[in-house]
Image (cartoon, rainbow, N blue to C red; front, top):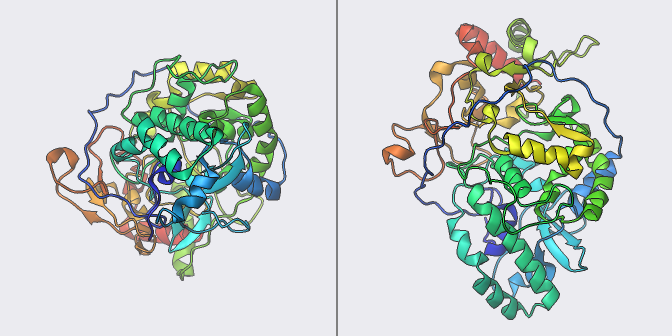
Length: 486
């Protein structure tokens, strides 16, 4: 555990418990979200295949660590001087990188020529399981539920004092203020009700709202109506699924050139078409690396006889949506979007929330990103491939179910629950995070900290996906054992 200089912690808009200490305060839940109006959407079904640009996976990994696709951050000299101020910096280094920076940070040159330390894709797309850093695992330990304490650190007065203390040049001061100003803009739209879920879809929407789609120029005042400040949460999915998926995002919205969609992270700081096209050159390599990732293997013993029985039960009951996983030519993954009325899970995201609202889809179509890619959200959710499913708890698109055992038996799902956010606190039998069931949620005044998951909050429901309820307990146990082998 270590302390992070507050401005640097903002690089990731929240810190993992394996990465940093976090504040434990009683959460304040935003005003109750209202489901957005139903929108017309293509009928749910298999996502069509689209040609993808080829790339070099090895170069893609290096680009994730070192390329300037975000292109802003804290001046490198300020980052390096933190130790002089008596502040402790650290974190697991990125495998295969000589630089001692934590895996979620990169050192880069901005277009103005200043050297800064800024966030990279691994801020969200690397996580810890059983004490081990796994590149490509969605980080479900970060805390986006309280950004209020950051406001003072982002104020112009504070930045001026920091600049003077660190003897920053005018160029460095400008980069610091630019980064802080972008964070001040997005923070009100990235506050989640609970810890562990991600506000990425809302983040994309507010960034789109401040940019001209034709030039990508940043405007301090939004050009589009911003998204609601109440976040519709998502559970950060693992990257290795992209080896099989024909679409991106839980609602199957990402169609066409996946590499172009992936570079949307650059909308935080890349302000010109020239800059966007420079980033686009490295993205096929990034996409190739993401498709090359293998999921981690279950690290404990498996009852192979029980798993074989579970495979048969799985293929009879689950393969229609999730595919089959035998090592033979008949192996299939259907890329199926399951209709909202059928899946029955929380509907808010599929009804057009965040970046999937009409105005943001239209912005995307008109923009540089829409040249080779498009957003076509479906009225349903993609049934994901289940490779490495054991490592990806919690489950459902909003992370509302702590274990696979409770996913397969909806009567056992806790309404209010909390977990430790320690990566070794894993339940091998239930396949997921150990949790504690509580009797009250946030709005009932339980007084619990933000690690409490309250499924009564709109957008956070654990309903739906009740297909396992029809299985016997012995069948569910067998399926769980089989899922450990994927």
